[in-house]
Length: 64
View (tube, rainbow, N blue to C red):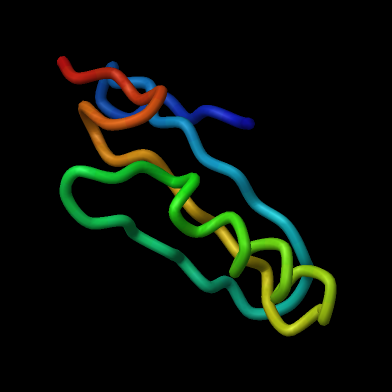
């Protein structure tokens, strides 16, 4: 898992594959693990550079 610092807030994300970026955003009350089968499948097929993130306050991302 990787993290980015955005306006002082740590956001955790995963990325896999190559190609055009595809951003996967989870709904309430989930986290990025919701997308793991899609991340794995699309990355294995080299269909896209798949990025899934934990929104602020969910999963491993900061809530403040």
